[in-house]
Length: 67
Image (tube, rainbow, N blue to C red; front, side, top):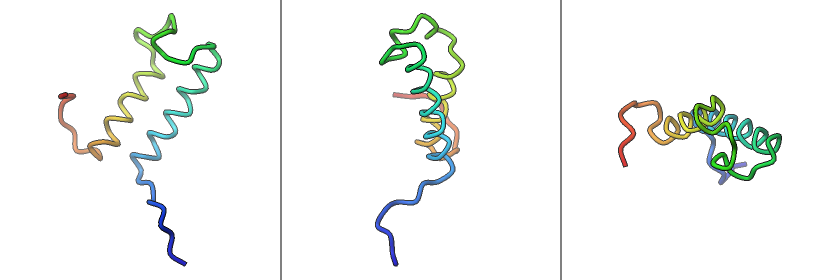
């Protein structure tokens, strides 16, 4: 049986794990966005999520955060 679903790579799995932690924190803090949280500046959970998203985009190849 062949699955049409894309298999997640290690970067996507790490990103999903970081997202779950972020969403759990938002629920605990009773906010729908990190920007509404008083701890947004310097938040370890948010910083880790942003880093994991970037890593999943570049597949660990490094580089800068250029937009």
